[in-house]
Amino acid sequence: MSNRTYRYFSGEPLYGFGYGLSYTRFGYSAGKLSSSRAQAGQPLKVQVEVKNEGERDGAETIEAYLIPEHAAGAPLRQLVGFEKTQLRRGESKTMQMTLTPRELSLVSADGTRSVEPGEYKLYVGGGQPGQSTGTMLRFHVVGRAAVQR
Image (cartoon, rainbow, N blue to C red; front, side, top):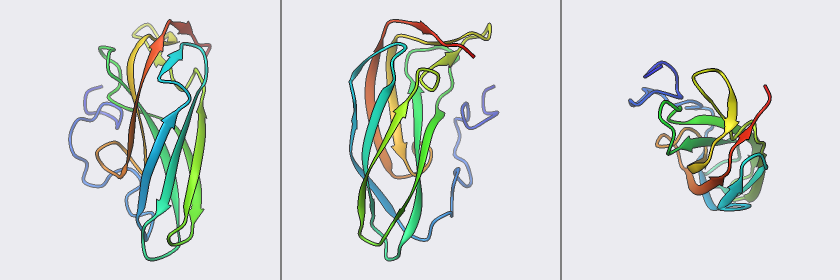
């Protein structure tokens, strides 16, 4: 799958996912997780402050990408959640998402889905990591949990 989809693409796209959908700029800060040590099979809550830093009102789609740092063959990144919000010029809003065990899971070569132990990053921003403004949060998963399809 190397370089086949956004999940495995290691190059620089000409236009990142969501490019040009807004006429203003957004900033991200104060990102935090419900826990830096997540138990496999339990949901993980994420919170981030989003601010419209541009000159006009606008809509932003806040995207959350899971980045497993330990699993060979796993995607480089995978979109696990998103929320859309409307912000007036200069307005800030605290956005929250709850990621389910399915959203935190990986699929093995045999097709089984599970939450695996190890180190992860969660990028929350206006697009893919490295292509947009956002914040990177780190966490560790303890244990292993099978996830039903």
